[in-house]
Length: 213
Image (spheres, one colour):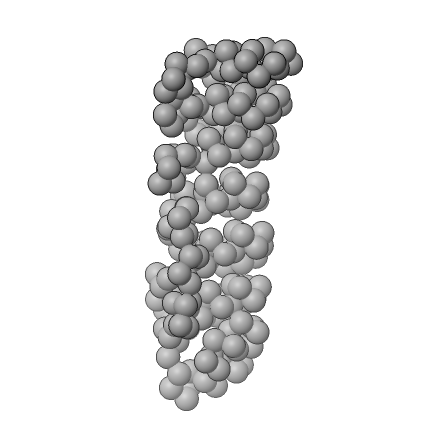
């Protein structure tokens, strides 16, 4: 629609004319994407803020397209301005984004600024993906030590595990020496075992990683 294209292009004056003429601010595209999603996708934080205010906040609870949400898209784009536009308007920081959630998504993409913003806005440090992984488990498996640092500093559960695989176990499995050292320094349980009974030290030995042992 004209409004969707105007939102995607960041044209506030055009949007105002369209709405004054009767265009629905809560309209959605065929994909299910809202005008807020369009503004976020176009990278227009000022337009996003204007749309939120004009809708009285109603756009914050609308869906994105079939796979995304506005907050997930802002994180994916790596834009602090876009994310702030949503968080300043009190969007739910634990809102589902397709098959993930904001904090695990930011951890997976190693968006450290987004992580800090989400946590300060009340994101759940222990929220799990459908497969049972938390943000810390995701970060450890990727060897994303700066992300691990942020999560631990804010109180993420150090020894939480999925099918016995803790953050330490996953860091060892990935051969991420720096992350392993950070987790051990934080007091990670060296005796945790996965569902088959393997300890992190056994895994390091099996993988031929004396640098981790």
